[in-house]
Image (cartoon, rainbow, N blue to C red; front, side):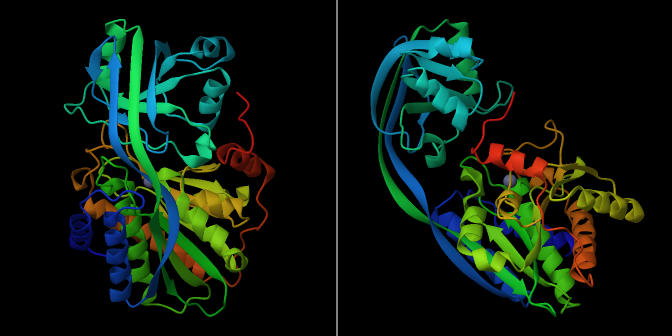
Length: 409
Ligand SMILES: [Zn+2]
């Protein structure tokens, strides 16, 4: 892939594409067309996602109106209660949540949410953005169904500057009011294939959806361009020993729903998949290349040796990655994620600043060359040597990440 092609794909997909939206489907169609143009068979696999339409959402603090967005899927109604800032959610802090609306510094994770509910919280306020950014954007959040588990409490999101103002003003009481209609929508995965000499496969994945404020150039059209670049490079030398399947995931940003739908819907196929290589964020001007291996430690060592031989800088670890490699590892498929992680001062994500301007088409092409080289090496293996057993250490991290087990603090 040439730098001009990278720039073209970023231009063609320069729009917000959230889970279940018309724009997400448009991006899926675009990626499918791109795969077919490269000569790969490609198709779209839809799956249902929860959705909501917010009709009204308001927040007042001591009678002053604070710009806010209500969380989708957090229910409807009005709640008024004392406002309590809760920077910690340890047992002593949680006692202060009773009959209050709490302001958190974090997002609403499963354990934080249920700890708050168990301690009688009446409403939750979160914030994002940055007091130093010029914008006053407020992200449209969703109370994920696997977080709420049907137990709902009104939640509102505000800008970081307003959170600071609330604390500076010593706000004592808040009222949250939300009206919404909850429904279902369709999201989809795009799948493309380059068949191999055997009926065993390496599956390469990357998500193409974005968060509501973001055009998702870095996170993660770059991963999708990575897949297209690998496809373009390796289709010319096909068939390789292993088939190559490319999975462009929808709805990653709302809880890895695309890869979860794929792994749940293809249990039999997974037995023939020897490895998942996931790409989530590449091609920035600045930033280090990393590998997160959700498989045996030997694979991490192989990657480090491979990179040393090629003169390619890398930092690797054995862990689960908050991306589409995780559902594969959880289904017993050895998985790894590659990423180029930019310093936060250079490229941020999930906001309006995630644009093509932070990306280097030339670096993107170098990242693709490395990834195609790595993929080819394994796709041409006489036998893919990666062990199929997921180590206990990774299984524990999967249990924690997928909320089956609380992380020991
Ligand atoms: Zn991502």
